[in-house]
Image 1 (cartoon, rainbow, N blue to C red):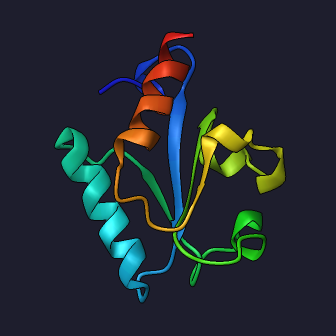
Image 2 (cartoon, rainbow, N blue to C red; image 1 turned 90 degrees about the vertical axis):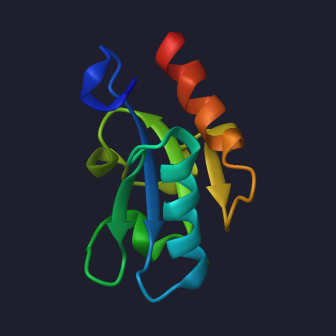
Image 3 (cartoon, rainbow, N blue to C red; image 1 turned 60 degrees about the horizontal axis):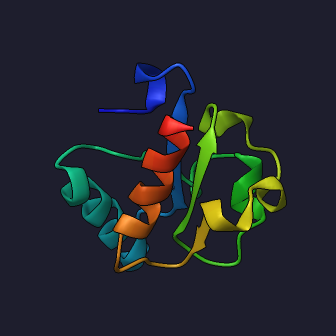
Length: 104
């Protein structure tokens, strides 16, 4: 799989949500089915003290970044084309950004 620690750029899909949220569960499943792999790093905001968890207005919230998900301190710093609020029925929007960042 490209990205994560498998590329020099370490591009990651970071999915912020909560296990109790139906749309978070759907997003996790959709991303996995997109490439037939666990494609995203999941942060369960119910149990995590990650700063982004307190910044999003709803779940799920997905961002594509260069570097580890743990390094994101402010969701506002993520470029708008790399940040997705709510359930994305077309997960290729997310994975296309991932692929583009891996190749840049």
